[in-house]
Image (cartoon, rainbow, N blue to C red; front, side, top):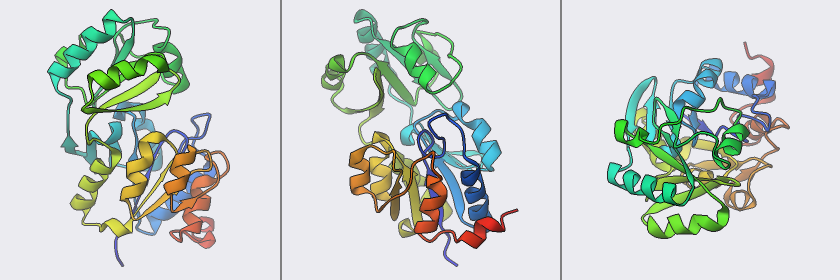
Length: 266
């Protein structure tokens, strides 16, 4: 039988609005794994933010930080840090304007300063412990993804100054900043090549603005009902929401699972 793989976004997809994995989702993933379907995570988050979930769901391959870092069965497959000179310019520019930054790599997550009015609510929305403040993090460690925290009306300053980078808004004051061409699709392609799985046998579930390239690249793209409208427009199928058994319903609809598979899951 041809090998197949399913990629799952985290927030608003595997995780519901309360950042909880539904029991139906857990059962669906176990059923996929028992059928020999490869399961992987594809997220904008840094690995340390979801290592607990990998253990709980028995997943050891993932695309993190929007394709900037890829792990295959526990080992690094791909890494693409951002240029340090760009980060230095960005840090100086943001500090002068009173805007905040956070830095992510495969091992750490840090913010440019404590108690920033835009950073704090953004991190709180992810239900994460507030990370340490280290303005010079980018001088000490590789950075795979940087987040800019500012009013939406100010984001254009960064988009113009760093026109060869991609900005993805994920909160009222929060924007991921990535090198041009970076996306989840890049990381997915790396994993497919490593696993020898054809693109047409790949599937993905997502809900956000950073999931466009992923859903367009895979053979079958599924948007959650809580997804942004534009993602639903390009999806092959729109399932129920992340709080209404959307993963299970979607897998049943696209034929990767049958009801009996879930009923007999160990």
